[in-house]
Image (cartoon, rainbow, N blue to C red; front, side, top):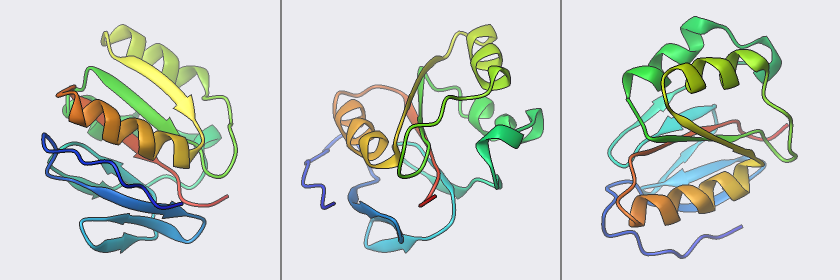
Length: 123
C-alpha cells in the first residue's frame, strides 16, 4: 500500500507499508518500530501477547496523547497490560492492523497531535 498524505507538521513521512516493511523517510524498516512525529526507533517485541512493562517503557517515555498499535496484517486484541498501563497514564489507545495504523498516524501527525505509532511488521 502506498500512502500519499502530505504531513507538513511531521518530520517523519510514511510513504509505504506492506508485509515486507514500512517505508519512512526513504528508508525501509523491516523490524517492529515505534514512530513519533520526529523519531523512529526499534521496538524490541516479538509477539504482542508476550509484551511486558519494559517493552512499554519507550512508549511511556515519549508521553504521547494517543498510541496507535499496528498489529501486523490483521487485527489482534491488545493484552490487558497495554490497555491498563496506558489508561493509568491518561494515554489514548487505538488498535488496528499496521496499514491502518500508518494511515492514521499520518493524519493525526498532520493534525498536530502528539501521536505515537507502535508498528508490528508482517505477521
